[in-house]
Amino acid sequence: MKPKVLVTRDLPGEGIERLREVADVEVHTGKEELTKEQLIQAIADKDAIISLLVNEIDAEVMDAAPHLKVISNYAVGFNNIDVDAAQERGIIVTNTPDVLTESTADLTWALLLAVARRIPESDTYTREGKFVGWAPELLLGRTVYGKTLGIIGMGRIGEAVVRRAKGFGMNIVYYNRRPLSTEKELELDASYASLEEVISQADFLSLHTPLTPETRYLIDENELKAMKDTAYLINTSRGPLVNEKALVNALKEKAIAGAGLDVFENEPAIEEELLNFQNVVLAPHIGSATIETRVEMADLAINNTISILKGENALTPVYS
Image 1 (cartoon, one colour):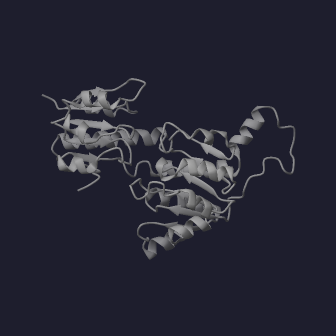
Image 2 (cartoon, one colour):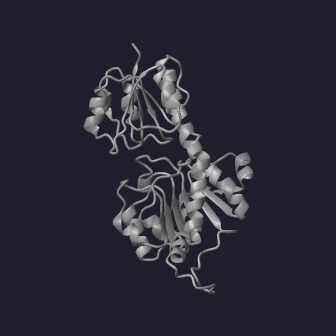
Image 3 (tube, rainbow, N blue to C red):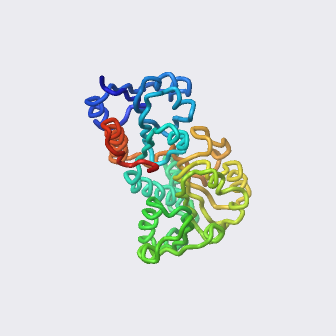
């Protein structure tokens, strides 16, 4: 008998058809995400699951699937999975690193430029027929060129964002758990600083760190107060890195100039007051949303699954 695989959402590309050649595949195609109860029921007889970040896979879910060998997450993050519980049960967890690096870096810059130059406001203004001619103070934004870009989390995506910043002649300061090598810092023309220094120096503060218990609310009331009142916060990493209520207060008090957000603390719910600020650009978690990237992610998640089911090593395990 073929092994059984649950895919919690239909995926782009033709990878699922390849998966069907080696496994019996059940794909959830409903408009609503699987509830935990539905997930427990669907996974009971499965050998593998290809999951999304919205699928919470904890010990209870794993114990409902005694044959489960692999959890292949269709994302670079895996904070939706209890990795310790998986290790205890001998279940391999994989993710999709690298393939979404460039597209997420692109979106980081899209949000940065959009909020600094007030692009969404300008688009609405023009479409509503308000544009009647050039004026010296019409929709003034902020210059990006030559400013200081602060990066928190200098992993693959952080580095990709910095490489794009070179064309804007920016001064780069970064904070990471461990400083980069001297050679890498010279290559990126980036300077290491403490978290506090990066926050206080940045004209644009961009978050690229994983979500862990230590990084939850990494940007809270005190950090927002420490930012320049002319600075912008950009988050394409994980929503709970930022305390959204504190962000709303900072925006009300004009403690910062604005924000560009692709992820949210309790997504898909968004702190309602954030919707009222014109100096906040919001996107619905589309950091990896290019055709090329999403197909590559699907292929990698599926290839990880096939490898494990064949008794081979995972291509991108999250632990060894």
